[in-house]
Image 1 (cartoon, rainbow, N blue to C red):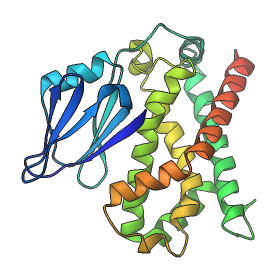
Image 2 (cartoon, one colour; image 1 turned 90 degrees about the horizontal axis):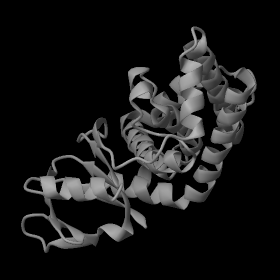
Image 3 (cartoon, helix red, strand yellow; image 1 turned 60 degrees about the vertical axis):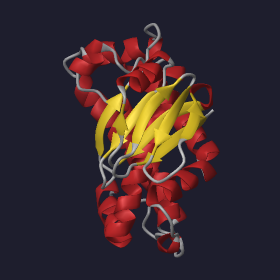
Length: 248
């Protein structure tokens, strides 16, 4: 299965044509995408969905991510979830403690420091051990410029959409009501961590010269580095498990 990326346009519609999604764009031939071949859907810009198509995706457990024209997240549509798993319960137990949110925030900061150091070392900074993550992040965004920051936002949202699939496989119940009430968004937190690895590619001299549709270009970049990204994700989840066991 592969993600489906839809770059919206005026009059773009998605309808349900069992067993497939039908994408309709004026002046173009309709496209059919069987649900059995779709892992998740990322929509950017103006895309009109029929309720039947939305419900078909929900029934199949397919998550939808809706992005604005500038790449910002506007909405999510979650598929059916399974039973509660250990990772979910451990996070609930932690965040229910008085000091839980602070402990989790400190863990996240330590993970970001590791990611920033790795990024700084790989891009050749002499002081990568001492450079604060916030300062390095500010420097990278300044170097990327407006165009590069837009592409970084697209990459982060693609990562977010992937994490909505990967996390349940690791025992995380993404729509748990108690976690939602605690305002924990693990997919957003991990997408920020994983984005550090993509800054390296975005800072390459030829990165700005990659033409074509920005969403498609960034989707291809993600696919090229997907295996490494998944390994980093699994490493982060293992560290999260170790942290939760350590404070339990």
